[in-house]
Image (cartoon, rainbow over all chains, first blue to last red; front, top):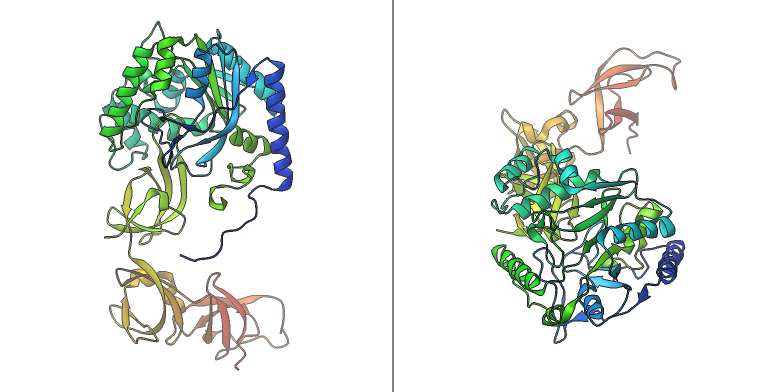
Length: 317
Length: 190
């Protein structure tokens, strides 16, 4: 190791910073015109989300840096807020790479009374307005997975999924052989996702319900969650859902996720009692979506990662 | 046994996979917002030079390969090995024909080479980028043609054959670029 001083200079050029400022202003204008009110809830929460694939950063003696403002925004909805959004920084432990930074900017909004398809349309409208691009395709997870992997993700067992992963040479050592969620995540991220959105943003909906937490289950088919993702140039840009309102299901899902964490050798997390209390009080039926602002800007400017659009990327913090 | 966690992965890191030493060429962190994180890495096998892609669960550890490079002086070749010496410690190393590979045709005793060692044994020998070698055999020179024009093959003292300008004669000493296998100039004795 060298003990060279880290560069004090920014990762983004001044021109890029100007584009960034313009994008943030465009997003705020779009939201204001549609009557979505900006809120700025704190970045430190009492408990992190209980999800197997998400690790929050803890703050000594204070709590956890929010990996998304979801819990705080849902408490505002339960309190009676109408459509709201937050545009701010979120934090995720260990997520560092070309398209990841442990601290990044997220736009997240919720509309009480809206359905998932309303929010898909609103996300498409946002992309058309601020990024001058349109969602070119709407596909079902099941179809796109079958097309690229050759298996039905709703019926395939872990052994069949593992076999395809091995055939494609993408199975990692030490994989939890009997975890369907693990193999679905692997094949989706490594085989399917890189091929999505080459001609423009693509909306994929109807994800398997196996790891759904705060998301409604499809009434007609309990194997599916009412969740969607938008991919552009093989990059995950937005994730949205019809939001779960039933607190009993939320408790059960959080317990299941904590069990999955323990099975993977990761410490379980305290569940967010304030969120559950708000859901006990009554969360209105709503739909919401979260969008990675740095990724959107990088894709708009033709960069092959978010490093060039962050004022100071992680290595220069 | 030293280990590297996936969060230490970067280009140039040397690791052991299936018992062979590899160098990481490219590392990509892949993770869905909801779900498991992976590292997709391109790795090059240091014995075969073949590049393959591998996937790891993020957070897992991989055995570190005890691989490092030394500047060694080439001494001589016998039936089995090419012999090298570390010029400061005088410690000697024996490199197999496989480790020397294509560098063999440029090796002249006393020359210095960059040698990659794995567990203390030479894994790969890189010839110096430029070597100075005498011509042992070539067709007679063409008088009056001193600069441009055609080329002809010349055999050098190590057995390597390079294309040289027509005016080069047997016994002349040449400077050769080993990466391209090309004649550069006549060597000026200093």
